[in-house]
Amino acid sequence: MGPIPLSVLLLVTVLTVVVAVAAEENTIDDKYTWPQWKVPLVRKRRTVPLSIPNFSAHPQPELSGTCGIECQRRLPSPSLNDLEQFLSYETVYENGTRTYTSVSVHGLNEVTAWPRNRSTSSRRKREVYGTDTRFTIADKQYSTKYPFSTSVKISTGCSGVLVSPKHVLTAAHCIHDGKDYLEGVQKLRVGILKEKSRRGKGGKGRGKEKGKRRKGNKDKEEAMEKEEKGEKGERKGRGKGKRSRRSVDSGKPSFRWTRVKQTQVPKGWFKGVSKGLAADYDYAVLELKRAPKVNYMDLGVIPSVKKLPAGRIHFSGFDDDRPGNLVYRFCSVSDESNDLLYQYCDAKPGSSGSGVYIRLKEPGKKKWKRKIIGVFSGHQWVDVNGDGTQQDYNVAVRITPLKYAQICYWVHGDSSECQVA
Image 1 (cartoon, rainbow, N blue to C red):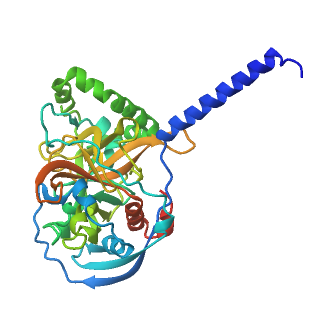
Image 2 (cartoon, rainbow, N blue to C red):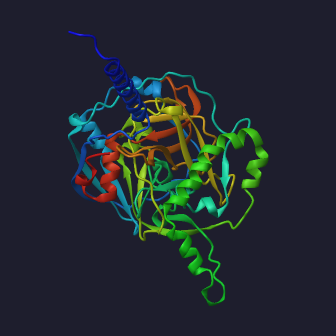
Image 3 (cartoon, helix red, strand yellow):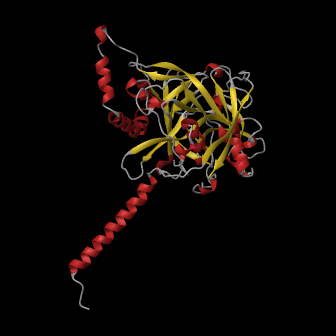
């Protein structure tokens, strides 16, 4: 066999390098791409009427007695029967009546293995400490545009996020204290920020606003990309002065309130049902009587937030210390379990129930998409080791394949719509 021509050797070398680079890029892309999950099916077994609740509970500024990550490690894994009981739910209707629906779970063993995450870092006290890293989004240019427009205010004093044209995801403790429904839940309303009407004589301005809306989501996305990429630098370089300027009222929008048709809360949240696991089920879904003309945000499932590039989460809510204003923040997740996320995001009461989201690429596409991966539960006093010792942390409930299946079923009413996350 004669010597191999130099041109052939060069060609082989170039091809080898190209293949290696392509493989490396695919590996990197995987870290930035939404994983596809086959989720179990949650199906209704039976619905029975219950007595009318007292609606006598009072909102709690912060929760206590939560079994934290280390505490939960000592608990036995729930069986299929346990999970079906936890995912069974109560529905409260606007006329004050309620029902109980038992469910069955199918295909749980077919779901891609959900990883057993371990606690890896120490945590520190939450609340706002040192420099306040929150951003008040008072300008209608942002507060009424996606993704901020998906954030809503609940009349019981919490926040929530639109997950369909007519459904809001929030924290269960904003609706029920574990024993009874809160005062006001019978007349529950959801407030959505809308631009104030500025129509002049002869309807001037209407066409202008309409034209702005017709531009679609491209301009909104570009504005938000600048916002999300520039936040850290602005905060670092300009400090509180920049935030105070953001809070200036420049055409501040107002709330438009919509009545809630029905509310669904998982039984896992109720006292004595899931015992130490109650914190895992601190979520609820509200169905609105009328669909607001506002974009919503899809749900997403991610196995580990800490393993994502930067491990950063975002959420917006209506913190009590900044009345009427939408407050945005982002931070890195410090610790996580199968169902809980601990983080250091500055927050105040009122932000509970906010949708926690991240941004990744859609599979096979270059387009980035935000999805909700959790519900901000708020400031909680956590039983860390299961010995009754309480420490306070920020806690968010993560969306798991099972929770995705349940919430999706509540939204669509058909579990066949919810087979892939």
